[in-house]
Image 1 (cartoon, one colour):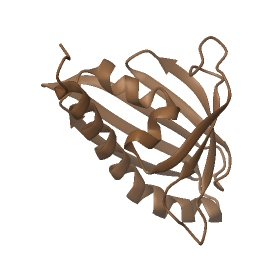
Image 2: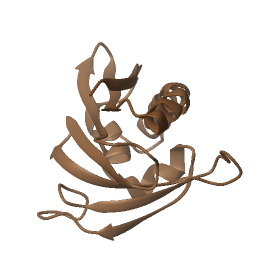
Image 3: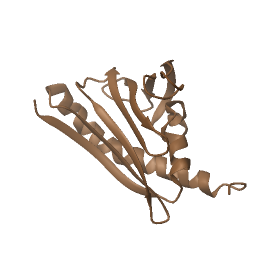
Image 4: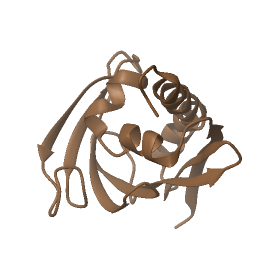
Length: 155
């Protein structure tokens, strides 16, 4: 089956560990992104937010008369560098896999957030929304990381 793709990339003026602290714990997503709440339903196998962790994110944006919920599962995590997760419920996508990659860049961290999923009819509708959402999410996490990096008392 054909696949759909959405991605966004930006350089944040913050080190990878600062960005990682924001992207590796989904409970922090409402602090900086377009979500009103997040709750972990299951801890990870080796760490609370690591592979195997399942969490439920509620959007703060109304879509088709409701606030969508996405249930996601952490698939892989490499401290300070890489996070992969899949959607296991909520939004109508099949075989969805997203990857957040952090790489050192000139003066900060390159953040790349990308996802692929099956090109079903519902998946095509989701594609329209995620193609707009991903750049906003990456800009928001970069801005939050930059605020944290510039906060007094940080070395």
